Length: 128
Image (cartoon, rainbow, N blue to C red; front, side):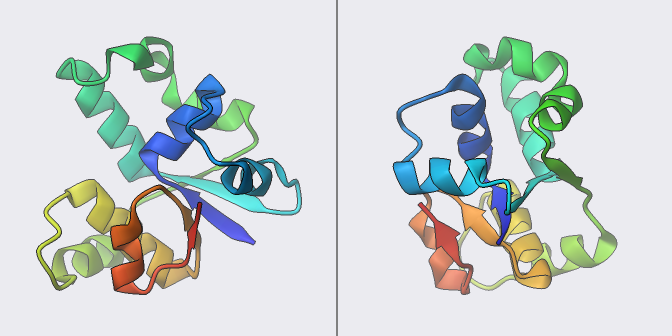
């Protein structure tokens, strides 16, 4: 299975948080699965950390690419097509980071590891 980690899923995985569900943990830990982290997630972590909204991410914010690589996860860049699709998604969802994850998951047939049920409204497969 190909997985795309939502920001909180990545953070909770790296911190060993109990908030990550057993099915999500198993999916991420399964070496048969490909785990991707969007550039949008790195952008969200860096932005929220800079604004003081994510102070617990000090170490992660210092080297997001290194943290991703150390876990054996793959970086997922944002393309112009991704941006177009994210901006064109219907509905009232205002979070630009979530809109990008939806667009990327749909265009690449990825399952999104996330607590957010709103993703299912867009036809995204969700692991939680």
